[in-house]
Amino acid sequence: MSESRAARNSDPVDRFRRFSAALLAASLALVVLGGVVRTTGAGDACPDWPLCHGRWIPPAEPLVILEWTHRLVAAVVGLWVVVLVVWAHRLGAAGEGLRKPAWAALGLVVVQALLGGATVLGGLAAWLVVLHLGTALLFVASVVVLWQRASGYRPGGADSRSRSFRGSALTALVGLYVLVLLGGYVGASGAGLACPDWPLCRGAVLPPAEPGVLEHFAHRLWAVLVAVLLGSLVVRARHDRPDLRGLTHGAAALYGVQIFVGWLNLLSGLHFAVVSAHLGLAAVVWAVLVALLVRAAAEPRPALAVSEPRAVPAWRAAVSDYVALTKPRIVVLLLLTTACTLVLATRGQPSAVVVLATLVGGALAAGAANALNCVLDRDVDAVMARTREKRPVAAGRLPAARAAAFAAILGVGGFWILWRGANLLAATLTLGGLAFYVLVYTAWLKRTTPQNIVIGGAAGAVPPLVAWAAVTGRVELPAVLLFAVVFLWTPPHFWTLSLNLKDDYAAAGIPMLPVVRGEAETHRQVFGYTLATVVVTLLLVPAAGLGWLYAAAAASLGAGFVRRAWRLWRGRGETAWSVYRYSLVYLALLFGAMVADRFVLGV
Image (tube, rainbow, N blue to C red):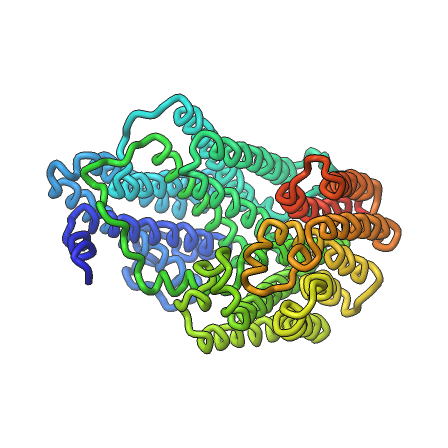
């Protein structure tokens, strides 16, 4: 152990920080456990309080044990808070900024316990459930504040930009709080399936004004408002508080996942695990936004500043390296095309089991392919500035054999999940895409021909085929056209990136088109493939039965793509970076337009 690390471990404030961080994790777990209790019907399994069936140790029945466990964990969390209050006072001057949030947490945990008892004795009345949930969120917020204060973020001065950003963060936080309370009421009142479809409600943009439907639809509309607030916060962070962009982007990304899980709620018929995950994600987004607000309103306290960078624990560094092997940013784009194809193939209502199996299995298989790519390309990755430190095998942080074994586990797991959760055809197509990417593209084409990305791009175009096969058991014309869209889109997307990295590729001996044929020829081919991509996107209108909404989106997005590629080719002031960035947005919005068309027009 280094001297700096030993000093931190002996620092009572740092130990307090780690203790409060662990309390936050336990508090979030308690919120999720409460969601499980509610959704499984265990909320009234113990009709009395604080005893359960008049006993401290209840009868060994599943629902009774679940409710009793929730109460036991809540008691442990309460004792945890008491310890922190005493600890904050024993820290003396160092605990000056910790005592108020510690006392606030203690007060809220007492109120929360009393509300829990009232909820049970009140027969799980909806308003009591919502009040119990709202207090739980406030308790989590107090623990987050305590943790952030112990981390050195104490109240301090801020310039006008920081104050403006803080106001936006507070607005988003309040919006999320109302959203969670609305969701709690929808669940507690039995309105969770009042709108069985999504994003429409009973097939209409404006549903009938019936009890249950109104509450459910209000929850959805408020969710849209919160999405707008979070999007605005992301934009503001870029200009006003770039140091907080990571937290802001994290909150927005988690909120996007939460929306997806909300859709799975309906597909699964409100399965308790999905509903609890939905609540848990909301609590995590809430905690991130509270931390964001604390940091936006604070200046790091010099007395708590650490002179050296903190050493990353070995287990955390290892996890980070294994995640890096899978190239998660690439996997996200593949999952986007997969999810949208699932909706397109089933006219908006795929099975929740098939959705989860296809997305999880596909993610594991894609991660396996990327990990094997890191193994086979470790020599060239070590030469290229872009990859020599980011790729753990090239950097020497992971042995090639261990990375290959990890990839094998992911690949086998992905195949099995797709086979059991979807069908053998989907699993086989996924395995074929993995093999093509590793053996044909990485091991052969990449180092031998400037057309490497053209042929190799077929691997990245496989997910729509997999998704279509997963829900239909067949590969039909619309799936082939979706494959063609991604296949033709890949060269202009990748070549515009490689134009900016041609020196790296030249140094590594990779015959990318800009290295072998030059920029002018690359610009010309970027335009040609872009034009072909847009043409195929329009063929999807009759082939997949898409309507005017998708047609208008495909035409307008395609016109923007073609215009940028033309200007790049003809030297009209367009840069390769701008075309590359637009290509990412283009594909995401194009597939999103397919989903919107299917939902809104119902065709």
